[in-house]
Amino acid sequence: MKLKICALSDLHGYLPEITEPADIMLLAGDVIPLKIQFNKPASKTWLETEFAYWIKGLPVDKVYMVAGNHDAYFEGINQMQLAAFKQACDFKLIYLKNDWIIHRHEGYSIKIFGTPYCHIFGNWPFMRTDEYMEEKFKAIPDEVDIIISHDPPYGICQVDQILEITRWSNESLRHCGNPPLAKRLSEIKCSLLVCGHIHSGDHDPFDYNGCIIANVSALNENYKLHYEPFYYELNYD
Image (cartoon, rainbow, N blue to C red; front, side, top):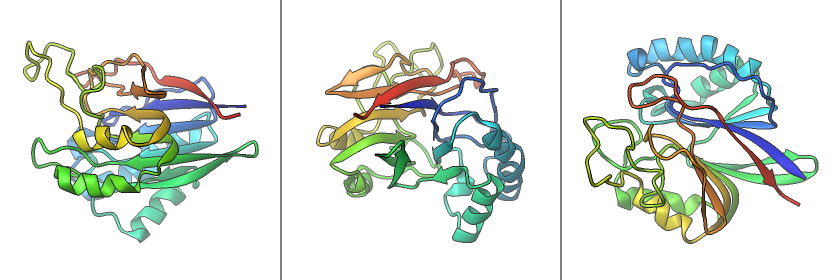
């Protein structure tokens, strides 16, 4: 049997029309518009209205989401706020913060882990030291079907390199990803990892020891919609 997946990241307020159906959607963070990213009341209103309306209209059964470093509202979200957000989405959305859940599909159980944590490159939400993340990533099961991470793993293909010509890029195409995540990924069995954060990282899926790694950022480095949603069929017979 197969589970059809649609995945996106780094929307920054853009809510593209999704017409191709899938079983589930994976959102890898940075969903809130840049202009309100630190305005928590405005973020709450947007999430529970415009964003929730988009979620409810998606042609999928369930949405699994992590936050990103531009989603400040989720950094200190309490249980009451989280419940209101889920209710606004008609409980179609599951929010993951460095934890995992079982998605059941046609009698099969698919283990999904999601984390927002990123390497430090400034004073942004969810950025943590390597030591902190190494401890947190122990929560990733030794056998997991899907990982949703805002940050890409460090040094695996070009998923964590800025490939567009920008003021941040350089001739050496420096790797910008997450070393503790790469380390943990080398220790476990995983079928699919989706990430974002580095908008112009390589969007061609890469097979890393049996794990497909995909940058699913929707926007380019100029914060314009550029990349198509990522679709993938996970075989679990």
